[in-house]
Length: 434
Image (cartoon, rainbow, N blue to C red):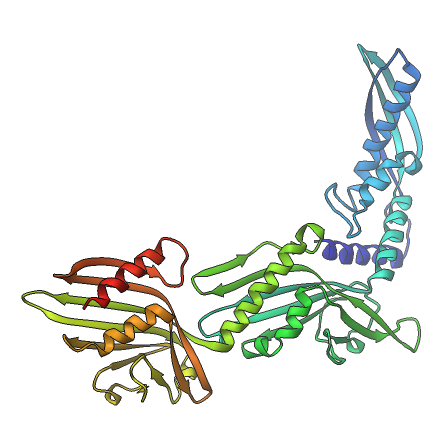
């Protein structure tokens, strides 16, 4: 909000200053009628009148200042231009006339007609904006980060956006440097005469640039250099990420999401550190886990039935399926990703997912042992054309009907510290008895 306001205000001021004056151009003065009120203390009417008059001045100046900024607009360093001008309202009044004044009980009221100097107000804003721009020709910058468990090589994304506050800077001349990196040409997007620097990492590039993105989250500086608009030399400046525009960290059994901007300040210092921690977790997950799975167990063991089935259902990208070989516990040779590859497990393929299905009669327990190992480790290893990876199991469906006991629960979270941990244990203990 601050960056947008400053840029638009600068454009407005430049346009005002560069526009040719004519007899029909807008007056540099603004007429106003207003009333001021003050409480009378110790019968001091003179002081009350002075305070009421100042109140009327402030009302007139507030109306004029409203052209430039509303009462909630704040400059980055915390100084409200609005408050500064209004606090010195009398200095912006060209002339005034008291049209009415009266005492009512313990208050004093003054009505005035006044002329406010728009030129002085514009000058106050212009000087403040120029001071800000001379200090921050580029920046501050925002960062958005979005990571996902499934298909991270397609959907992970991080994006940096920086404002170019000095519109006289040539976009073609701007270079930038990430923390610990080298200078490279900046991607400058131009709308009219306003410019924005934007860079986006997608998919595997987010993982490859983990260190740089983490450094930005922690507040390390971005460098910029560009042609000096007033000379032949290069100018260099630094800024940092001051706002997280939005984030999603899709982690095992939880999603950390923020849709509202988070400003970097002492109050939010811990928040930025926590977000960096979530980001690093997401990157570790992306590097080691290429699929998210659920498992299902069905046991029917009584006078009429003596069988069980195990199912592993995994979401995994098509690129990870190339030369896929899966290694459930007890199957050291691996299961090749096609239905005729194994006599114990059936492989069923669908877009961005697959499932392994096993049905056995007791006393065979090969697949049951694989299931119990998943409950213990929450993972199965695999190989593919890209190398080695893990399938991470998040949820469990357990249905046991047996003379040894009954257990029916769905969508149980694995690796959970809450009540689901007891449910996992209950399924595990009863299944192990078979």
